[in-house]
Image (cartoon, rainbow, N blue to C red; front, side, top):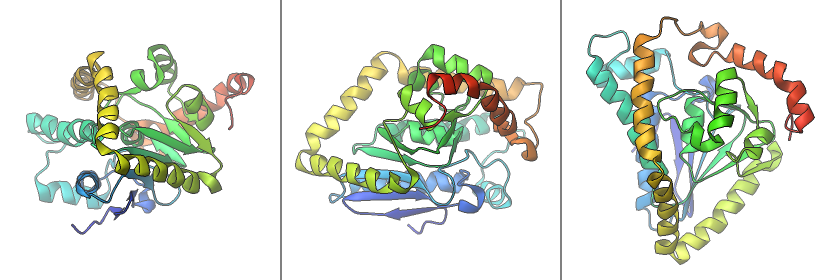
Length: 285
């Protein structure tokens, strides 16, 4: 497959790089389809023992593409439903496929996955990072969770912490994400790639030495979460997300104000929270 919105490099540690730096790796429908293809190609590759997901340019991903001309054209060409169209059942199914089914499938890939996050990781960016087994982040990474289609934040952060951050609507520092357990390790920006790839190489060594042990260990941990309700709650939250989109009285903010993610507000609320974050030692890594 020829990829246009990602870069895929097969190998012992396969690299999947989101590659729309002009748009800060906003996730087009084509990007999501290519990601799914690349992930499954890596799983099928007998020489691959681990997969690293990262983003080109200044950001990991600022979330969904919410209106570039090329994405709009691709959606129309492929027959995807539009938010302004009349075929709401198809819109529900299209979004479910791309944002829930794909992401759950990536969570359950048979091989270990690592997200390497730098710069912005916003809404849909959080979703795809959350689907990976392990997350490493640069010290200057900025995370913005939201009520999105794959709503894992109560599991990622814990219910009370998720409420605190989501209801206030603000960015999180990498150190804060590490402290709350969403991020596994943080490094300086200039060390992030080397440290992530070194870790992934060790993981790949272990997988290739005993793939059944590694695969079943990962899937058993996922099953423990599922026994507590993870997947059923992700599916239920998606239904509520669609209800919210269909019934909300307010419109998303203008692009200049941060669009669907209202990033201007999230930045402002982060600055207002900094005194507490500094006192707690969570302002900077």
